[in-house]
Image (cartoon, rainbow over all chains, first blue to last red; front, side, top):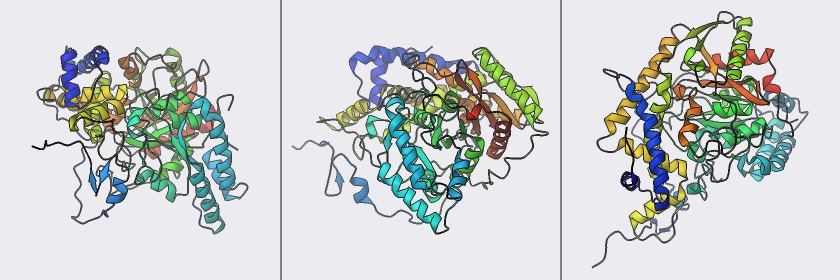
Amino acid sequence: MSTIDANAVNNIAHLARLAVDNKHIPDLARDLTNILDLVEQMNQIDTQGIEPQAHPLDAKQRLRNDEVTEINQRELFMSIAPETEAGLYLVPKVIDAE
Amino acid sequence: MHTKTLQALASALADKSVSSVELTEHFLKRCREHNDNLNSFITLTEETALAQAKAADDARAKGNAGPLTGIPFAQKDLFCTKGIKTTCASKMLDNFIAPYDATLVTKCQDAGLVSLGKTNMDEFAMGSSNENSHYGAVKNPWDTARVPGGSSGGSAAAVAARLVPAASGTDTGGSIRQPASFSGITGIKPTYGRVSRYGMIAFASSLDQGGVFTQTAEDAALLMNVIAGFDPKDSTSADVAVPDYAATLNDSLHGLKIGLPKEYFAEGLDSSIATIIENAAKTLEQQGASVTEISLPNTPSAIPVYYVIAPAECSSNLSRFDGVRYGYRCEAPNDLEDLYKRSRGEGFGAEVKRRIMIGTYALSAGYYDAYYLKAQQVRRMISNDFQQAFNDVDVILGPTCPTTAFKLGEKTTDPVSMYLNDIYTISTNLAGLPGMSIPAGFVDGMPVGMQLIGNHFSEAKLLNIGHQFQQVTDWHQQMPEGF
């Protein structure tokens, strides 16, 4: 059985880039542990030699011709962004100035 | 007027006894009247609907109408609609105006369907009760203290209350069939890849499939003729010929072999529902089918496997919501990481965050083989069970859900108890099979659905069986009081 404790919740939340309120951590730890308990029921199944199934019809990736099919819609796409300037998406400064 | 099927409305439009504008105004009025009670719509698009209706009437006057031109329809708010708010019932996308149309939406428009609006749902399609919506829960029109099912609960409630003749849905683990069952209507989830996923906001890409809710199997066939087909814009779209789904509706059921999986009648199934499904099987036998017991031995593993694969795919798909290019952004981020974390932490609801975290854990270093790879192996065993069964039978019949609609709030405190409700629907998504739920009876005044499962690309057969069943039963004609 995997038990998800507060440290594990914080670690997973960081990997998933999710801010989690401290007061929700105990509930999350309990819920995630319960879900993993459910998931781990599959460990009772012997899967020796079974090929994993990634696609329900075992389809292969289709290739297309290397042709341009999309038109440039930068202004339309950027019109719904939270913050832009001069055709660029704005985010907080990543590199500190000296 | 609103009790008529899509087929009957199409006839009324064709013989000009009603116009599309009249129909659209009638259904919009019903939507306005009942939405405060049911909460089935997130957005009503009255102006564009009336413009589409006017265009439909003009096309008909010029002799350019197709079979469904001018019929009102509703889109689950998971399908991108150009210039119209597309929220996925999430705070994350509360301000999102889609810059393009989903292929399903384009196909509906090309067929002349009139979209009345965008229906409520569980956030990002994650849920079985429609209680996980940023815009509040949807109520079941049969009993407004109960859930309509989910995730496509708004579409199901709207069709059940006859606010719209038909609506789209999506189904990742039962999100069309379960709400169809809970709401007393017909719902079909086609074969994986049958309907384009282009412009469907992705949850679990190897499981997601679009479909429809209607009153009857015949109506579902008419809509399958609109939405099915290959789409080069969806790399997993199936390049397989599309039949005329209406052409085989009247085929005889003589010689049809139906299998009842014994695992679908095991512990956990409400005994009254078991009786209803057994009676439905008897009805089909009287229509010429033969019924045998079959086994799908890996059924108990379906939910455990699903809660690895669906969250893993969701954690990957939902990484696109970063507060940078579109959607919600937190106030005054300190730095880039704070922007990501708080935009996502504040923008996503509790269930979405739980699934992202489970998926992130299952895919994290050191756990991949134990969870994701193992789940994919069991997934193949579940698929193999079905293929084994289809050596002996043409279709599989069983209950859609173990119970009728549960009460609002009944399962919200325990995610696992909510998950267990999808025991009979999840396997078909894992195996990519088509499934359909149609009304088969009532328990204590609440509707019960029966589920038909076919082999890949056998939608026409499921619709044929559903239509034949609906010729000799009237469960699908019942509608809730007060609407």
